[in-house]
Image 1 (cartoon, rainbow, N blue to C red):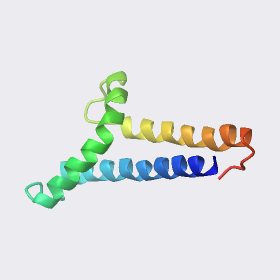
Image 2 (cartoon, rainbow, N blue to C red; image 1 turned 120 degrees about the horizontal axis):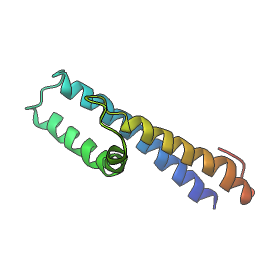
Image 3 (tube, one colour; image 1 turned 120 degrees about the vertical axis):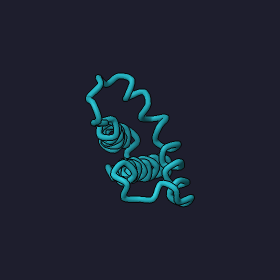
Length: 100
């Protein structure tokens, strides 16, 4: 059971950094800091989009239109933090495992 909790915690942590990377990349892309015609830049952007869009799309549907501001990554990071803390401090002690 310990392995399951460590794996879930690691997966949440990795996805956390993927979301942050996607947000930073979108800013760099929007302000033309990176060359959008570069094949490597394009493939990184596509990969980050495909990894984050399935989780961000439902949040974007629920949020009101805020103009050019997209706060869905922040909300997703808060949800991931809640899930991680819930696993660490509520579910793990039920199995006799201390928080990570």
